[in-house]
Image 1 (tube, rainbow, N blue to C red):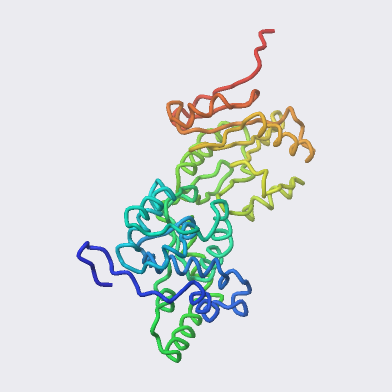
Image 2: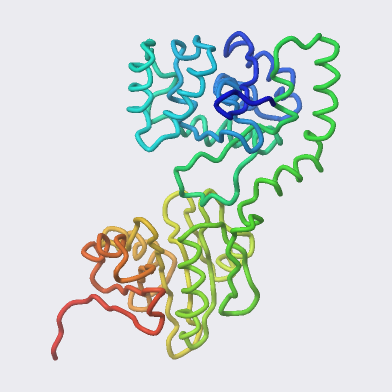
Length: 367
């Protein structure tokens, strides 16, 4: 793309409306090929429109779900390049929707009604974005931690070229056929899965497991803490065995699932899973460790401990064999200072910068 005098890439030309993008998507990613409606539904059309509107292609101008949900018909009607860039900068800023409103005031344009309510990002992210990624149409910046709010999604450049206006129908149909032949095949979908796999990022975290082997975790501060815990704390158990490690957006790992099943344990992965489950298999200990890793929030509170204990006893585990641990980066970290007053009694805290120490919080008993 050529550069503007502001040293920014020239934004691509747009189709006439969201409906036009949905019509185009029905040609490129129809349900008859993808097996789902969410690659060519209104939410997918909104994603395609906004991505093209702000020039979110390959490594340029990544978006997040809210970049889509905060768009409105009133803003979309403005095709001037400075408005399109102004919307992008506002929508990905830390001030979020407030910045979008301020942008409209500065440029004296109508804010209009956002396309989606503030609590409906999941429809965009968990349905259409997910399936567009699965089919190779959307790329993900895997080096960004999965828990981060930073924008991470862009259109695959070949797919973006199919969304341009002005292509003769026969030429468009041929380009779509070529793109489909390389992206909507089993090998094409496998390439997309590999490209979007956070564990394959250069910033991913490799952990040496206490009971042998290794595992690659998604990039991010939680994984760094978890690595330290598994490589230092866990080795202090007599016979440590890793039963489960949680990763954002991921179902139970196949190997973890097999291990849990072999113990007769059933996990409700929609609500119960802690960040890590460890067992000490030594016969004189026979303990089960529930572990939460706090890089921002989520310690083992009284409520969380109660829920985990309820599950444990329903699975035949003895309450006095259950242990509860919250892992932090440091005692001086802000997230630790916020979380420590919330810790459940009868639980422990561990800090990765002091790996040889363990903090216990329990009832006073001097007898």
